[in-house]
Amino acid sequence: MSDSEGSYDVDETPHFTFIWTIENIHLPINTKCPIFTAKNLEMTQWSLFLSCEDSGYADLRIYRELDDDGPDSIEIKCELSLLGTDGLPLIKKVEINKFEIFSRTFFDFPDEPEVFFGRRNEFLPNDELTIRCRMWRTGTEILKPDLCFARTRFRPNRLSFVWAVREFSSLRTDFEGKVVHSVNDLEFTDFFKKDRLTENKDTLIPNDVLTLRCEIELAAETEWNRIENYRYLNSINSNVIATDVGEILLYEQDEAFDTSSSYTKDMEKLLEEGDLSDVILRTRSKSFPAHKCVLSARSPVFKAMFKDMEEKASKYVEIPDMDGDTLRDLLSYIYTNEVGELKWQSALKFYRAADEYELLDLKKKCSIFLRSHLSASNACAVLILADTHHDQRLRGTAKDFIINQRKEFFTSDAWRSFKEENFKLYVEILEQMAFRH
Image 1 (tube, one colour):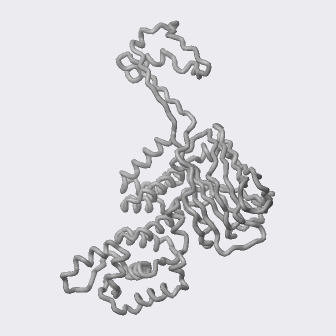
Image 2 (image 1 turned 180 degrees about the horizontal axis):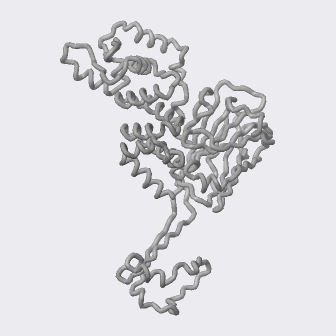
Image 3 (image 1 turned 90 degrees about the vertical axis):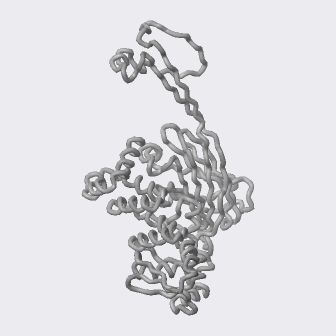
């Protein structure tokens, strides 16, 4: 029974989420993910199977495995989706079915050729396909959703050779070289005409040598196929799941830093009241008492800074390149490990500050936020930011976004200004477009 039209609640927390990334994907393909156990679904075991032809038409199936400890039959609502680089579904399909042991359900997506050809840059960035499977047991509720992350990597299997045909101009049109008989062969009839080659001999047959290159791509071999992580998933963020396991963990809320915990409140109070502080951080407009031990434990930059200050009597540290509100919020994160709800401008400020003081988790949080909130009005600014701070993931996502939306970008005043002020990045985008198309 299909549930994709109206009864599906997009905000409903899934009982189990499975993220499967397939690397180096080339058609045709037939592959099965590692078997995963859904603990919240009565220890049932499952797997996904993807089959896709050269034409791009795909078949995605979910299997309940033969040997599990679950009931003979279980009713499951299942959503299968293909994710973009921001972790959000580009297309999805929902079904409700009763699964017997070793039963399966087929999911057919509309316009599969668009996935693998027409919109390849969106669905398969860097030749990676990410599939998300979310599952609910109908009529039940749970406290902690489960998350599982798996990865399949293919090793390309390619052969190539070069054939140099010397004294090409002396070949007769009726000449035939050695004939090799083969049960399986592939013939390219009228691949080129001699007249056309001789008309462009300086470029096509220099020194009267015609060079032919043949590349053969065989079925890729599986390099690995494995489960990488099982985690509890914070229900607040269950609808936006990044495609990298490290990013998934950033979306989870550690119970040790829950907003209601006494530890967080105590650390916030310590910062607010400044008791036993031994350093004062100053911007142009505000000053904040703080504790060297806390700052040093969280930031290698502060740690090195305080070592240099040991022989100096002053306990003031000047922070001239940051406004007071940003420094206050940054200190709050350092003390409590919480950043609150990110907005666009705050994410930009936090990102720069996190990079400067080597707060890597905060930088990654902000990078994920910026990648998932790209638009025509901000993509160029994000690309410049990522280039300045050497963030290759954010840089690549911003470039892909600009290329995919080039019809809108390339006629805008913002793009003309970007070209003039950032010529190196502009050339990179043009080269990437030429390579892809």
